[in-house]
Amino acid sequence: MNPYLSLLVAFVLLAANAFYVAAEFALVKARAFRIDTFAEENKFGALLTQKILRNIEAYLACCQLGITMASLGLGWVGEPTVAAIVTPLLQPLGISEEAIHLAAFLIGFLVFSSLHIVIGEQVPKTFAIRNPEPVSLWIAYPLHWSFLLFYPLNWLLNAASKNVLKLFGVKEVSHHEVLTGAEIESIVDVSAEQGALDISTRDRVRGSLDLSELTVADVMIHRKNIKALDIDLPPREILAQAMSSPHTRMPLYKDEPDNIVGILHARDLLRAISEHGRDGFDIQDVKRPPWFAPMTTSAEDQLAEFLRRREHFALVVDEYGALMGLVTLEDILEEIVGDIKDEHDIAVQGVRQQPDGSVNVDGSVPIRDLNRAMNWDLPDEEAVTIAGLVIHEAQAIPEPGQRFAFHGYRFQVLRRQRNQLTALRVEREMEEGMEGG
Image (cartoon, rainbow, N blue to C red; front, side):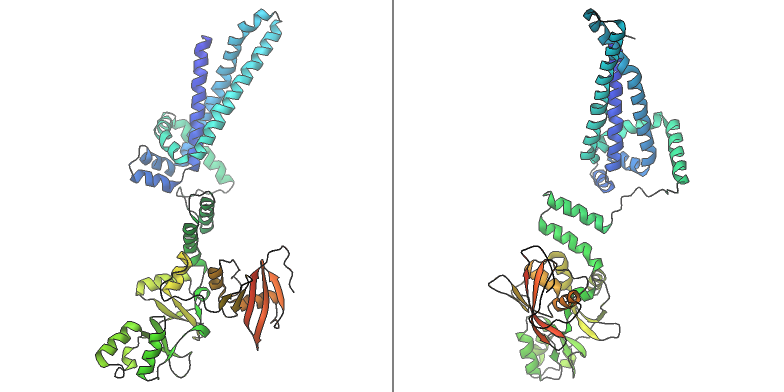
């Protein structure tokens, strides 16, 4: 065969090798949900790519067949062709025939090995990894045609690989791409680091994913911080306290604060006043029945219940029915979107920033509220309140004046009442080294 025609065949084989390499890596890296989006937009090749991904193992066998055949063809045609072209150019140098054949072989080997590695492998592989979905659309039809052309061989190769995998106990999996919450969080974090997502969007996505890991106990307002009304108060006093509260819903208790017997909604109260006057309404007719939620309920399930019942407020109880706190729809939404502030909102109660940068904190302040208020990252897996965190880390109930350092923060106990830490000072630790004191 004419050496230049052989050279043309070699370059065709090189292009075929590059095509199948690109096809293989594009199909492996392509995300099914992106291809589904392209199909909805009627992009060229998207529907066929969807079908290919549903039978991806067979098409990967086709890619391997194509790569193998092209590589073997290059070794058979490419290197001898270059050697045949180079040999006449070396003969005028006056060296021996053996040296000419050896030099021509080495040149042919180096030229086509380099082209094979760079053009036939590395470039298409890297390009497909960087652009998996677009490349998948481009290669869909040519790959499908070659799959049909070599179907018997493809079928045999695919069947053989499946049987080998079965010998090792490897089961087939769905072609659908299913990501775990941790994997999604990782993707979101990387996207934020690369500038594809802003920090607030990243935090909202992570907040929604974290809901399933949080319980109502993690986000509730502790019962000691609940502002409840005595149902036996005179109507005018109930009205005065309700009007001075920043909240539209307030629990009603009888005899003792933990005995919640109803919920007072400001809208119901105003309606009763308009009908019966400030002293003429009956609180028993105004109150709504309380809704109790177990403290072990996940924040995700509680959000779904709020939406299903069209409620915004639930009282939290333990397994014995004892009141532990309350949770609102806003509390859960803030875990997703951050603080939701309006003109009635006040700063986090019990958190007082000091001129030196430290923060005086009531012991009953939830860790999550302190983190949100100060943009800190204190752990909340082992304790709900800041006092509980210090007790957990100290493995004892510290005395006033004791100091500790852990998790990158410094803590000083300011006040203690009986077995409760009622006030602490907290500040970021600026230097390395976190020894307890």
